[in-house]
Image (cartoon, rainbow, N blue to C red):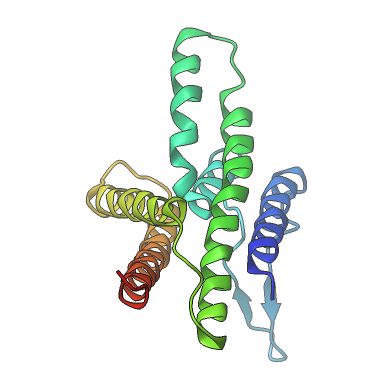
Length: 184
């Protein structure tokens, strides 16, 4: 199974849904009407298109947060800078790389279960460390934040904290296993 290709594909589908939802308001709402006439309101995918589409894009691709720094710096200097569009598409682009790297972790776990783990790569370990640091900082900031950030960011920071903790654990175990199995 090719996780390194499947996860970026799922990320692209999610980003297309986020991109489509503001263009057709109300189409992403799912309401269920029961036989006795009662109605169940189900949470909608993107609550407020202008602001929450960016929050969803940021949440799904949280480790791509450093991509936002040059856009923020340019937005301060230039007044007619399409900041929201560039931010959305930068999260999309760097999110592809993020989900590719997460997919590589999945492929290494599958390979490890079948036989010995593949040799560790420094890039994978650095990615796992960077992801954990960003997820942990985002989680702590959003948990203690009282500014009214969209709740979707808090949920995604929690998810990314779990994903990045697992990724770093796998990468460290891979290094320890490789160090113990290679004769000195």
